[in-house]
Image (cartoon, rainbow, N blue to C red; front, top):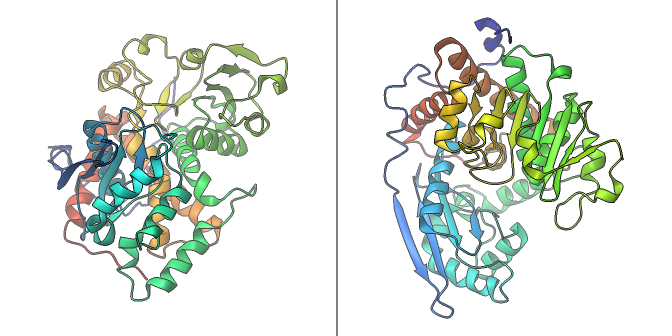
Length: 418
């Protein structure tokens, strides 16, 4: 039986972005309001449909990536825009949430031309209000090249316009974006996975678990899952299972995560020819039912369904993928005493870091970025789990309460960009 530490454990770092902590009276009403702007665009050349949803504006700004995938829908983009509002509000960022999507295969030969025409139609938003970024099917390099062709310096052009010296601010941000993390990878590529790892470490800490005995299973080894696995391994937590499209690799004694990640091919799958023989090879879905303390669904949305719940043996779930758990599954997990740390907190590290960088709160020292994200993520997780253990409040409901409180408090603020 897990021993829950007393409340003093949660006072080591006071997160300034946990306001009105006890207010659960209507924890989703505000952020669940209608979008500020919703637009469907049809490409005049190919007929491709594109969507822009500005869910909320804070100080005239909203942030959210642009994705490209066959089958992308308005409802999908609307849901993701709302989640961006949740992420920014949860971390007390003075910016609203948005999202854009194009219903086309990113390998289409005219994909970038279509993206250019879409952005041309959205120029009023990109120029003054909407800061976008890479998302599914679109690289940041391609995104910036298209925007440059339209006369915009970067995808965060709208934020740069708030600076008294946009050129100087741009150079400062570029320097920060070029910062390398330990191991030589760009900080911008690993900070999201680091945030997920911190959510896991915060979970173990809040629940009084010995980290060396806290086992982790990870579904998906892309940017989020792979990064989280690397940092958890580095921190001393045994990652016992990782799953990719080719199957699950399992070792109850713990996997050498960096060595396995180094075996990933161009499709992001681990080359099994380099995997040690003692590691068990199981079906992909086995990762959900293997013994672990923390399960990280990091592969795709709705991975944890009601059908999967009876087979889950983990004691907690930390969502690295957006909407990784269906609402019905989350309720059933709660009945079994398994809390779910929600996506809009656990996977928001990259979004939070980008805006900290824009605002000058972090710079080129990766330790500053890691420390700030660790402090904020662990404090939020500790708060959610204290409410869970003391009052049986779902972590998602706790997070919605402080996200909504922050959203109200930030409603009339304007960001300062140095």
